[in-house]
Amino acid sequence: MKRTEIINALQLAGEGQLINVRGWVRSRRGNKNVSFIALNDGSTIKNIQIVVDLAVFPEEQLKPITTGSCISATGHLVASQGSGQAVEIQLTELEVYGTADPEQYPLQKKGLSMEYLRTIAHLRPRTNTFGAVFRIRHNMAMAIHQYFHEHGFFYFHTPIITASDCEGAGQMFQVTTKNLYNLKKDEEGKIDYSDDFFGKQTSLTVSGQLEGELAAMALGKIYTFGPTFRAENSNTPRHLAEFWMIEPEVAFIQKDELMDLEEDFIKYCVRWALEKCQDDLQFLNQFVDKGLIARLESVVNTEFVRLTYTEGIEILQEAVKNGKKFEFPCSWGEDLASEHERYLVEEHFGKPVIMSDYPKDIKAFYMKINEDDRTVQGTDVLFPQIGEIIGGSVREESLDKLNAEIARREIPMKDMWWYLDTRRFGAAPHAGFGLGFERLLLFVTGMQNIRDVIPFPRTPKTAEF
Ligand code: 4AD
Ligand code: MG
Image (cartoon, rainbow, N blue to C red; front, side, top):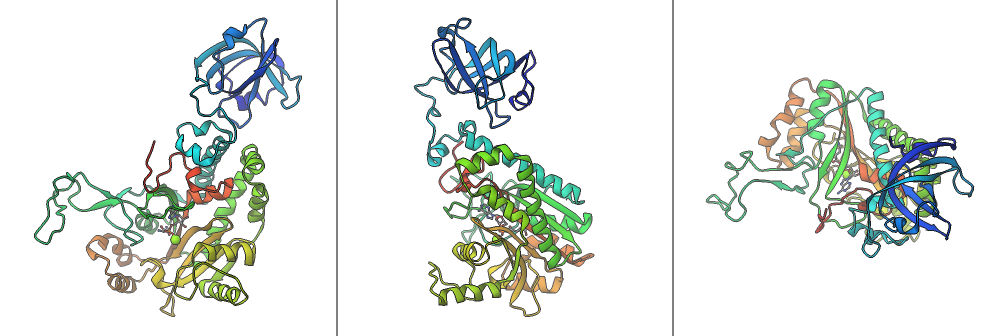
């Protein structure tokens, strides 16, 4: 018999029709006469109840049906007598696909800690919380593609293996086929990469932006959406060594239009979650973060604050003068710490902030330099609970200025020739940003740790699964 997914079965009127469902047993309880199986197949957070008449199915036959086992159940869909569900299935035929020994199956108990669940990341999608998170993750990916498609952007695939360091932070994972037990070095003690797979030193990309800019100089509006890698040794609830990034790049726009795009895009994604992920959000709102739905609604309905870095520093220094204590000092020219960002967003303004015009020395080489020659047109979006969720900028389109900046930072020119060609041939004003997909998911799910919004997190000293 053809399988009905539980999400669809629950929409049907229970008129005694015969249906088949398949899934994993969440629990089985009952009495001498009847047994109730709560079955979940991942299509929805909701379980379907299967009612088993013990006169027809003796207890002995139900023994293998324990939490975590996988079954196929056929029966009549009827209106439920009990509260809590509209319909239930009266079992007529049962097949056990796979048992799960109650002595060994780790997801027996409720209320397991997030830390423990991380150690069984191969099984945690079967919990309510992670089922919800991963369904929302899928929905956010769909929202992102839909937004850009609707707005005339082209999905452009940038390489994962690269020879250039976009952010210039030296946080790249090397890619090599060299025998590390027998490394050949030249007279100066440097590794000779000429006989390596690519004939040069290569790494996993930290960002698709540079190639994205090339594409925007041809297709006008593009976006990337792919994995990026950073070997930064920051063990925080907001950093992963492997994360997914969305990077739109747009020709012919200025700073204001870039900030409009950042705000519009993020609101679209959050609105999509509110509209399409209601059951999962309600679960998370009830069990993970009581303020979640209210926070999502407030972001959709509020205008983001737009503030320059210099204004931000003034507000922070004023706060310090009035007795606010920060762990790190904040003075003009220093990067904001997460506590500073969160003070501005959560305490001072109470809403998201788009901060712009940062000191050039704390930002990457490609950002457009302002007339003052001290600041650049970077536009980061700072969010409640998260801090930086988007990093973006107008790009420096002048070949001379870009060259000067590359020289000042001593970035190896030979690796950059193709990037500079966009400034040589038909250079155009353009801008773009990068949204950390998992940071967006932290916000949308209310989860506290970035390791819990990606199926298999990669962080310093952990690459299990
Ligand atoms: O601010 P970042 O470093 O900007 C760039 O990479 C630009 N090339 C993007 C662009 O303009 N096209 O990173 C962008 C975003 C951050 O705002 C943050 O959300 C996320 O990527 N991010 C991380 N997310 C998880 N783990 C990490 N280690 C991250 N580093 C950055
Ligand atoms: Mg950044």
